[in-house]
Length: 107
Image 1 (cartoon, one colour):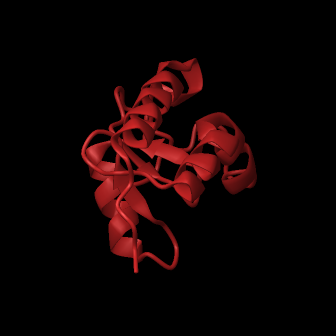
Image 2 (cartoon, one colour; image 1 turned 60 degrees about the vertical axis):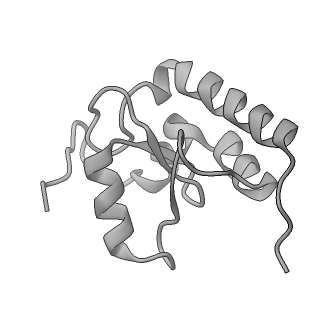
């Protein structure tokens, strides 16, 4: 039932993701603030480091849908979500009630 995405669309999505990661707010993991996130939770709209991506995956796909920025093929729906949100906007929404400077625990 799923159709294979054409190469031009895949490359366009890859280029867009690279551009999104160049934005200052997306240069660090949305959760722990480590440099160079290479993963994303597309439904939450955030870029993540490898450690936090594992935490998000363990929550289940009903909460966080994680993809690799470099290794996975992204659909139009997924691209629309990550472009709409980004770390700054998503954290303003999802972390609105956390104390300033909060860093999640390692588990």
